Image 1 (cartoon, rainbow, N blue to C red):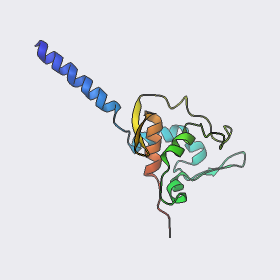
Image 2: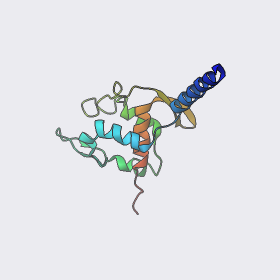
Image 3: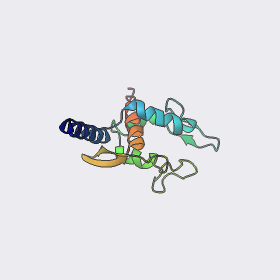
Image 4: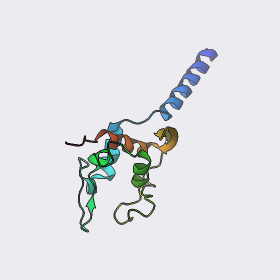
Length: 135
């Protein structure tokens, strides 16, 4: 009996560890997007004109604007609000405090980078809504 309980505990611990290392899917990111981004970027991610006259960019064409490449590191930086002075906090709010949680390894230029799960989920969702360049 004691061996069985120990085995169950080990199995549960292994399952918990593997869950933490699992990247979220687009559906998880879509929920985070709906709760944080739709007011400015529209529920489809296609952007809008803000009350102050600025334009929120079309997030479905990020890769198309960059020759088909999706710049993961740049997008993570913008989402968390640390745009390094390129985007005013009055235009793109800092979501750093909203995007806390367990860390998952996000592949950034071939390196697994520990990233809060909600931030990783948004990244995966944004990648999933990219549209091809129309020619």
